[in-house]
Image (cartoon, rainbow, N blue to C red):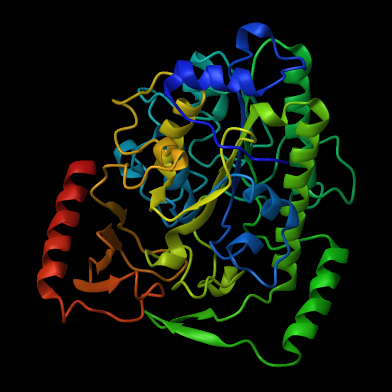
Length: 474
């Protein structure tokens, strides 16, 4: 597929450019022909290093790599939080998660949800004339309040009350009743695998919408993969058992010491997790193939992203390795918050790599601009449209810094922590210990050389800025 650059010249000009570059010989109605479809592939716990296009040598992701090579790949993309629910709230609102009441992942008995006063991404797309769909993990609401259908999505399915499935295999439950039982799949059969079935249902939504020819579609594929439980089809596990043997033989897994008496793997070599990643990749390929079959590839934006860094610290969920980044999910070091992200739109977004730091809440204003919809400046107060970066402009986000606030202890071993990234400096502050670390990321991506003592003035100024930001956004 040939990728060509086109200028983004505002919503009317953008739509004209789309019309000029597309045949639109498919079922979209002429009234909505200028509006591209949108698919957001939102993966759970996928780390920055977990794809071939980001440097993995153990996991195999040819479909995702091929797709990423066609669009704008962000090499320094961050999640809004080091755990899932806050990041997911940020995606929906374009705001730092604490602004909308999220600082930690939801427990099954909690009723926190995105406030009804917020205009969610789903609602914004509904207002723009889209048929909206959500499938899979949501984790920013409960059964009674704040589920996708109550937050702007016309169609919702396969959404548990918790943040993970009880099992990835049919009937997607364990012997005991659980809020993690996966609904809407009672017609399945033994051997069915959740990531496959979820994808097939998502493709069904796309086919139905295109077939009706009345509206463009907006679909979020909220995959439970690659979150625990770590389960995968047996043949794929066998493949990676053999690959592990070829690559590492009988050498024991090396571990890297971490703060608070923790440690993380130094290599990616979990065969079952690798099998989950490859299965996810196969399913992304299925979505792309379906778009090709329907003739809507040129008219569909795909966003691929994750909700936090790879899980590598907790002994109960030590799935992957984020090296050379430090630590993993649940921590404010790079391994816990840096994630894979790319955006494709064949014929409109050129193939490129972008090193400017970006974050989850940027996706909301970016998509609104790409579809030519009205921006929501009072809503997306923290997010920045990435269209100027995709356009090729440099340093155009006009954002003074990025920051993270996580005032909790969690199962991944961290302590209450806040962090700020500004002018190439990264400050990490442990609140209960009152300990501050300072890193120069351009020279120290792995955050190994603490410069807080050598640069006390920089550390002091950054901590003051960070504390003020916390006061303003809580």
